[in-house]
Length: 215
Ligand code: PCA
Image (cartoon, rainbow, N blue to C red; front, side, top):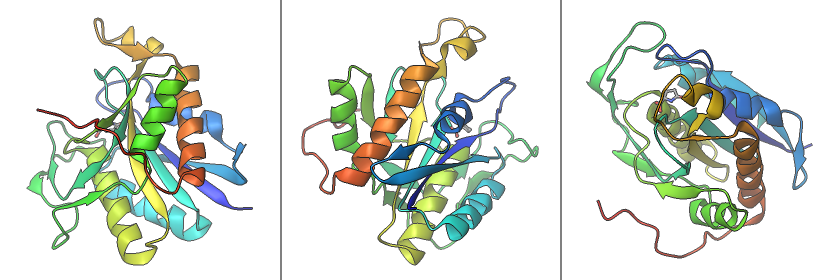
């Protein structure tokens, strides 16, 4: 059966859990639009996460790859549109490394766009009553590095496979350890990713409506 790969990331920066992996795990084995969801937990280790992701894609040959990560402090599901060829780590990764101002892929292009139908997904999520938006920065840390590594690999090796990155907010449980920050129920985030998989597999042309950032 055709596969879709959904990845999450291990906890980082002192958190007990990372909801991106909890959400991915909850979807393991589900079938959506004729494809089965395979999941993978990536380490919060710069350089390593990319290699593990690529090895899984080689093994699974999925139709699409949707990587999830936590963006604590954001209030909605963020469909990332742009990956940049830069790591500028504000905190050390889980292996204790803190690279500053280095490229994800030496000699690679400055950036890549997501090949997920990001606006169509946002539109569908909003219709379902789930707060969502297009984001124009995935940061300069592990998530951007996973996103850039994914897009560089697909662009050069499997140009027809759709791939992109989705940042999710704190779960309610995790927000209880970060007072004052917005959060979303895990079940809502699982539903959101289900929708993103469905839209990715069924909507060829992205929707066209203004949802850009003015600043
Ligand atoms: N979020 C961080 C790293 C791991 C994660 O889930 C990021 O946005 O880079």
